[in-house]
Image 1: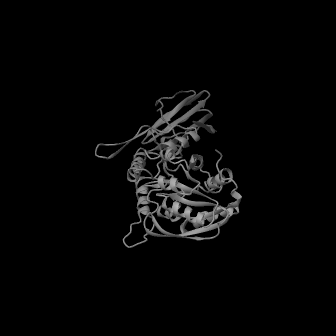
Image 2: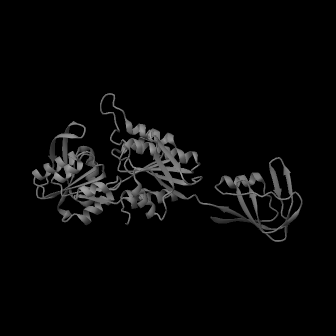
Image 3: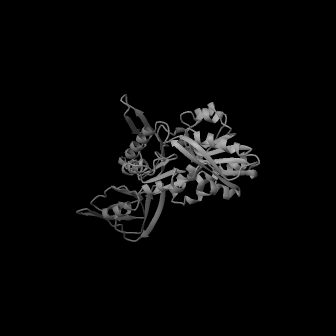
Length: 405
């Protein structure tokens, strides 16, 4: 709680309407009515329905008159009015999708996770109970699009709405891996743009701000009419390459498809390395039929860079293509390690030396099954984004700079 000395005033008058004016500018006040008869006014606190005002005085007296909604206090000598204000605190909640990441973020910020209970009834209906007050607080709900996607999305929507109806000042949905991000365009007749639908639902639920990471397509930000901060794994990826990959100066950055070319070229330019591209043709979703390499990888370390790895069929086939074209080793670095279906089997049987993913999606069970998986912790980046958002600082610093671990 902060104390702000407003002024030293001779013969001031404080009315209820003035108190409400102070309260409307984020100053909390409480009110205790004075007696209608003149009485000595010593150091005390005057209370209004909106908050409190501490009063210091020397040999002051006050008289009170009431007319409609106005109570006027007229001290006879100089007094000091002290307005007591409170800063809204950060409350970090999480659903069942990303509890470990949320705990790391909260620990990084020196906070405890706020209390919330998210359960399912026997008919699979989701029930959310917010376990503490969020009135006038800055709320951040961390929930990634993973696991049971539809359940995770409903949990997030219900938690946002619960905090909204509980009078939270601002609600930020922190979605490390965005829901339905791959359904971002109408690429065939009658295809839904589900990412846009998801954006609409988040907004209607009551979200005031979105923080996400490495969107599958940047235009998803345009689906919202509220602020969206799209963070990037690029700084962490560059640091990993420099510190974990031996002889990285003799490497070439490879995009496994045309859609990731911009991401891969940005990393290649920063590291001053060559760039190559693989053109792929699909028979159907999650099944690649043919790959063509554009560029030279002979005698070099090939580093595949992509935004997500689902069944890993693309990465496995891309690594095989690179080795056939003379690459010494193949590493793969992806932002979101979904690793569904036969992904673990594909990785273990592939020629990939190491597949590096971030912890936007929980992967503890996958690591136990696949020794080739390595993890980049992005909780410091998310924690710093939350801190900067809460304090009204620029988040763009995080786009190109690593946050110290």
